[in-house]
Length: 221
Image 1 (cartoon, helix red, strand yellow):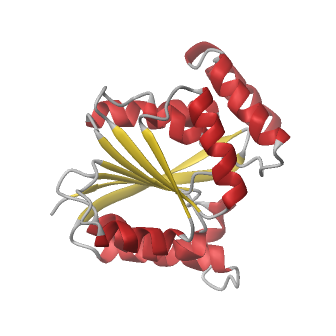
Image 2 (tube, helix red, strand yellow):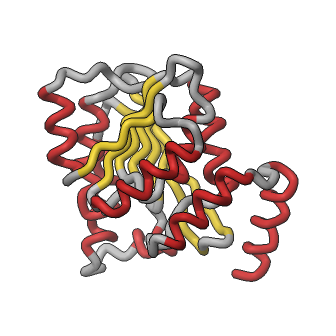
């Protein structure tokens, strides 16, 4: 099945996400810099871009930058006065991301903040940052519950919150798992289920990156 998933991914990408030199060069730069190859696929990147456009988002928060591949996809969906703040723990990853952002001509749109995401989120709160229109959570999974708390804090009614890698090859159904990533995602789900502030669902996906999925929610109050 993995081969079929990959072939379908390639088919969809070829037809709906035609080759983009800049984005290909971003991925090449990430590989050259030895960043882990865990970027979203082109089809998923296009989905993020479309969600930004559908929402009409002007302010986007991304938790987990890596090499800024997904960041650039989202930035391309913003209006001229749009802005993204993206948080990256690893200084090397952040350096590569900044270079990629400049290469893509997006340095006036994207701000990369380096350091522990929870600390950076606390700094944003001290800065009295305005609410975001869309928030993409794609960082270390054990901290997903804390990231969701912050996402809700930085939201207003209508804010879209997306969480990546929330199926984990089906392991999320294993309540006995000792993997902190699985337990982090399970707690994330439980918080979504119990919160009156957000209405959410999760979609399973298969493709060249295997079996996983994402959470999509909209803040109600």
